[in-house]
Each structure stands twice: as C-alpha cells, then as structure tokens.
Length: 160
Image (tube, rainbow, N blue to C red):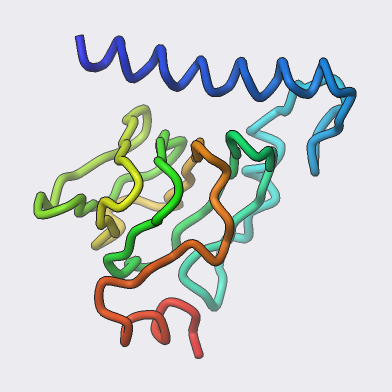
C-alpha cells in the first residue's frame, strides 16, 4: 500500500511538472521543448570518474518540483534539506544509505528511496558502481539548501 501511494505521488509530481511546461510553453534547462527527456542520454554525460563526491545535472527546475540526475563517487555525509522532500530512484548501482536513525540499508537499481524535508540522510559505501540516481525534489531544491548534521563534513563533501 505504501509503495502504491509513493508511486502515485512520484508520478503526480512528474505530471504536474510536464503539464506546467506545456501550459507555460517553457523549456527545461536541458531536453526537448515539449517535455520529454531521455534520461539515458543524460546518464551517458556523467563522467566515469570525478574528483568530487557527486556530479549533478538539473533536468527540470520549477518552483514546485525539480528533477535531477546525479552520480555518486564516494560517501555523502549526513545532511538534510530544510525546504524540500526527496524521491530518489536508483538507475544503476548499489550503495548503503542512512536515513534518520536507520541504516545502513542497501538500495540498488530499481529501488525508490524517499524522505521528507528536515530528515537527515546520507550514503555509505558504494557497493556496485556507477551509482546513478534520478531525483525528484518537491519543491525544487535550491543547491544551497544543504544543512550538514556535522558541519565539519561539508569541507570533505565539497573537496575544499
């Protein structure tokens, strides 16, 4: 039952985003003007290696919802977002994830993880790579909306 509700919410967010594009004749930052984006094409743009922890491509950036893909290259320290919920669909790979006080839980290709705003989360070891993730943020997450549970981990994450 929870899975059905989660999938319904996920597809509702997508439908609202695409419907808004059609109504306002807006174009995604990347993709086709009529609202179809081939996710596989963008996955091929993610580099095989990267000197940071994450490489992110924003596909749709609307006020009410955003869609991104990213590839993780290493562990992500525990953090949370004050303003948006997140729905992560694993496209490729497998990793340990920590959400709130739970974990590690292993999620891999075909799994959907989700949490509400204010919920601490991060990932541990990447068990199978590459770890490619399709993310739906509701509302669209501003890149600055990352609050580190331990502020000293921000330096590691950003590679400074």
